[in-house]
Amino acid sequence: KIMSKTQENLMAAFAGESQANRKYLAYAKQADKEGLTMVAKLFRAAAEAETIHAHTHLRNAGKISDTAANLQDAISGETYEFTKMYPEMIKDAEAEGNNAVAKYMGFVNAVEEVHAKLYQKAAANELSNTDFYICPVCGYTHEGPMTEACPVCKAPAANFYTVG
Ligand code: FE2
Ligand code: FE2
Ligand code: FE2
Image (cartoon, rainbow, N blue to C red):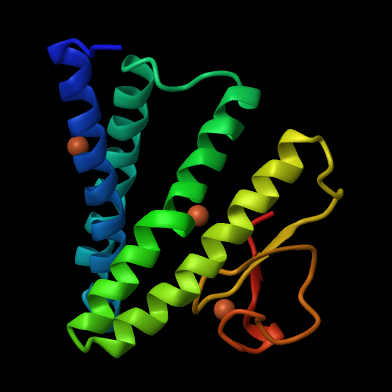
């Protein structure tokens, strides 16, 4: 269906605020590395505010449904990424000889496929009663504690962390 100008604006603002959030968190890490603790704090505080803006815009755009519908939306987003978006981007990176990016995007592609499968599991009400563990290198997302190296990027199991 056709979006109103305001709804279109909300989605553009959502994209911008979302990017600002992740960018400021990356900038905060860099500021910490440079020993600029106060600047890091400011970046993290502003990042938090941008998240509030992003979530309010998304809600006002009417884009948050019930969880059953949100899971379907998440499945289609992840599926688009691993079947179309990343495969094409990987080809482009290879064509331009950017092998590091092609390789990392290959990892990401594999992780998005895992996300689609996990969301499908959730939609079928088949998640185990356990925490999720994340690979700090590639983002590989594992249901339950990790006992062996990352199946995607080979990072050691000990480096995985949980987000509950
Ligand atoms: Fe903002
Ligand atoms: Fe994903
Ligand atoms: Fe990994």
